[in-house]
Image (tube, rainbow, N blue to C red; front, side, top):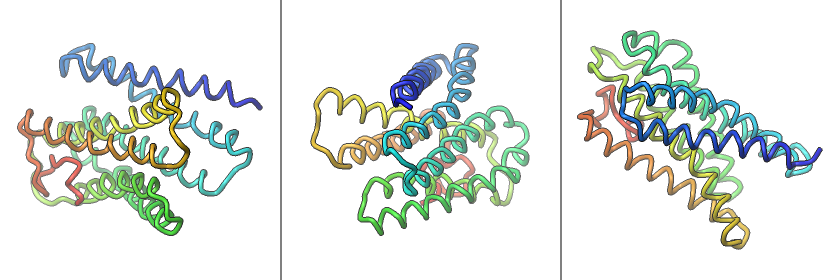
Length: 234
C-alpha cells in the first residue's frame, strides 16, 4: 500500500483542524461562530489522531513496538485533552459529572502512559519521548488532583479547564506542522533535534498562553483553586 493516500488524508484532516482551531480562537468567545468552529475542531481531533497510525506503519515498513506505544499514548492524550476541553463547556453546571469515573480513568491512564514514555526515553537516551511524556504527567496529574479535590469549586472552574485543554492543544495542532514545514523548506540534518525543538517550544508557548489567558479572564493559578493552568500538577 502506498503511503501517499494516508499522507494526503492526514494532511487534509490536519489542515482542517488548524483552520478550525484558529477560527475558534479568533472568534468572539461565546459567540455562535466560536462555538461552531470549536465543535468542528474537537470533532476532527480523533480522526486526525487515528490517521497517524497508517503513516507510522507504512513509513517503517513494519509494526515496531516503540511506534505502537508512542502512537497509542499520544492518541490517548489527544482524545483526553480534547474531551476535557469539550466537556468542560458542556458540563459546566454539573462538576461532579465532569470529573466522574471517565475523567479519573483517563487522567490516570495518560499519567501512567507519561511515566512509561518517560522511562523508555531515558532508557534509550532519547529526548523526544521525554518531551512527550510531559503531556501525560502534567495534564494527567492535574486531572487526578482535580478529580478528588475537596470542598467547593470556584464558580468558573469550567473555564479554567477549557483553557487548559485549548492551550495544550496549540502544541498538538502546531508542533507537527512546524516540523513538516521546516523539513520541507530548509532540509535540516537528520536527528530528533528538530522535533524536540518544535514540540518542546510549542509546549512552552502553550504554558505562556495559559498563564496570559488566566490573567486576562481573572482565573487563579495557585494549586487547589480548581482553575489552575498547566502548572497545576507541578
